[in-house]
Image (cartoon, rainbow, N blue to C red; front, top):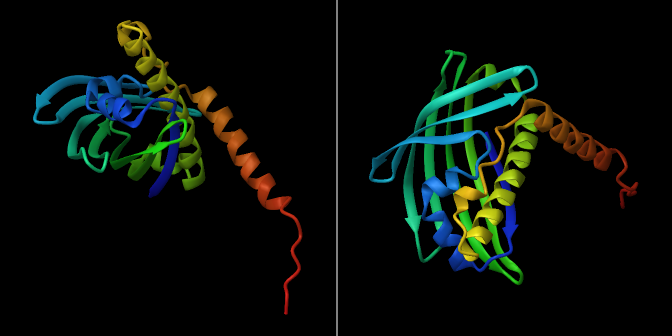
Length: 194
């Protein structure tokens, strides 16, 4: 399933791109993510913990930087893993494109996500909403870490975002789903012209 998302960072594009060059720093911004080993050559071992409602999953696997285009400010990464209790698998390709804005940098993210097992029971809408919540948390953490670096403070003192909590994510995703339904239901009536 293809999911598109984006966020803005109140920093110049070169500073954000430099931040994206430090993959352990980027991973530290992802709720529930942890790199466990740097295999070299842009390859990493890691794990991701996530809870959506009653389902709690912990995926262990690999991530690899497939492309880093400095001129276009484009980063492509692929990751795959299996739930440590054997309840499913996930794989994804992430494409991040950076573009300057008047107030900083726009980061557009495209995820091509494949789920099997327990994680696959959630519909596209729920997965999209959960992804949007995680992207918001990622953007907030990234901004805090970039600010810390600019102030000469170790970004590790900022701390990692809390793990992807089921209740918090479910409530925010539900609120997003309800807003989406309300927009569809309350769209102004438009007569069909003949």
